[in-house]
Amino acid sequence: MQVNVRQGERAVLQAMVWAIDEDVPGLVHDHDSMPEVPVPAGLPTMVERFAAAGIEPVSRYRFWDIFEQRPTQWIDDWEQRSMLDPTYRTWLRFVAGHFADPWLDACRMVVLVDLGGWPAADAAHPQGGFVAPTIDVSCEFHRFDASSDWLLLDGVSPHAGDGLVASRQRVWDVGGRLIASGISHLLCRPVR
Image (cartoon, helix red, strand yellow):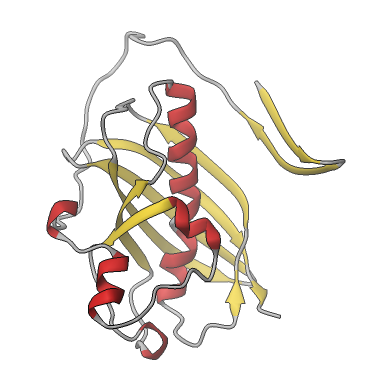
């Protein structure tokens, strides 16, 4: 299936989608394991962290308002941080909830797989000065579980150079099951 999304006359997204029926016979194994991180119930939200520091949370990008976020690690002064590993591990919950329709719920996974690349890469570059929109994303769906509100996004950026950023993401449910995984490729651009 081909998907084309337009705003007026302008194409903003083009995708190829394919799927198989459920219960197709084949090999079965589950070899990956979720990173050892606290469960979301044991972590404060970003809003709670800002409130505890006496800071009024202001969204620099409204996109982030669609999530409740519970970071597995926290840096009090992000702007003055030292260089970190290019990883991003955060529990995310879509404010709108989840969908019983597996096609709609798969869209939540695509958003998460696309999301993890930039925060992972940015962690390794405290000097900032760049943004990196996605130019390519590929997502694999491993199981459907509409009951899982909280999802751990585990992103890593193993390489950045020549204006391109590579990233890999895995999405886990609270029970430690791999729900989706994928890659995104980003194009670095200077902030204007």
